[in-house]
Amino acid sequence: MDLALISLIAASTAFVGTHFAMSHPLRAPLVRALGPGGFMGIYSLVSAACMVWMYFAFVAAGAGTPPLWSGFGDFAWMSASFLTLLALILFAGSLIGNPALPAPGAEDAARAEVSGVFKVTRHPMMWGFALWGASHMIAAPTARTLIVASAIIFLALVGAYMQDRKKRVLMGDAWAQWQVKTTYWPRWERILQVGVFPLVGGTALWLALTYIHIPLGGWEAGIWRWV
Image 1 (tube, rainbow, N blue to C red):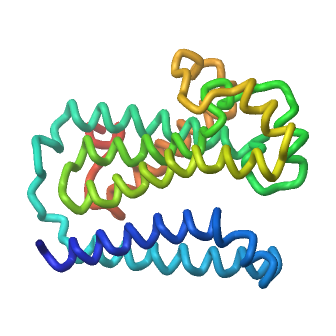
Image 2 (cartoon, rainbow, N blue to C red; image 1 turned 30 degrees about the horizontal axis):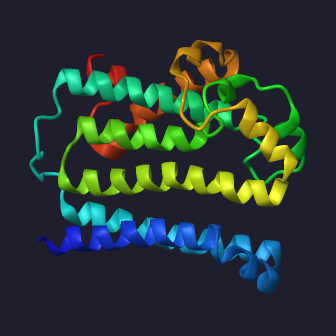
């Protein structure tokens, strides 16, 4: 196997492994030792280091790697673009009233009436990341893309499940109520019920990010492939 791909596998494994370790078994002892601010600093530093490693390993693997199966065609791009749009709608909506985020008022948010993207899933940000990974696997099925996308999908969906367990301990009855009112698995039939901000904000993000994909990624994405 190519050394760059081995490095990319190692970086992706480190990225996922350190996230799980610092979010769960190591979180409490690190917070006790470093305080909340110190813990967040270490968490951010380790995550950033792993991401930089992944980036350089990804670049070293080369953009000219042939796809493992048919990709890069119009149908694949349309499917990937649609999944990315869904991902960004969920992501945009997840920034408002999300009890999973470490912010003041999380327990009140968990006890509130379900609204926005939380009608679809209680883990909209995680599912957004997973859909992003799936879209790239469809559109660009090269070895290097599959490695990174698989790591992101695994981290997002297993991380969401583990987050439920952690939040039940940290938030008690508030999170238990939130779980009863919401679902882990998305209910896609509700996507048009999420409200104006997720739909408009997610679409705006989609247009912007797919546009800058041209200079940054070297490929047209979204509608820009045909415009």
